[in-house]
Length: 105
Image (cartoon, rainbow, N blue to C red):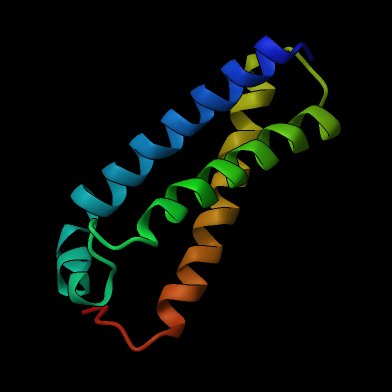
């Protein structure tokens, strides 16, 4: 995979994950998100940019895993792999969130 294609894929995947995050956390689970907002870091917190960096690292790893595991130009294979990795990351987040004493009512 060329550098340009790799960067483009990372950007596309990062944007897709961001849209899915906004769709789930700010729309689908907005009441749950609001109930726990006090436990989250404010946007002005100096550590907040590291959250975006961590998501970027996750996205880079997913793209690299796809390139190593599937090594295909098939869009359907990429979509299925991305969906499975997204579900894995969502399950990891859910394990973390539900393991804490947060409101899930």
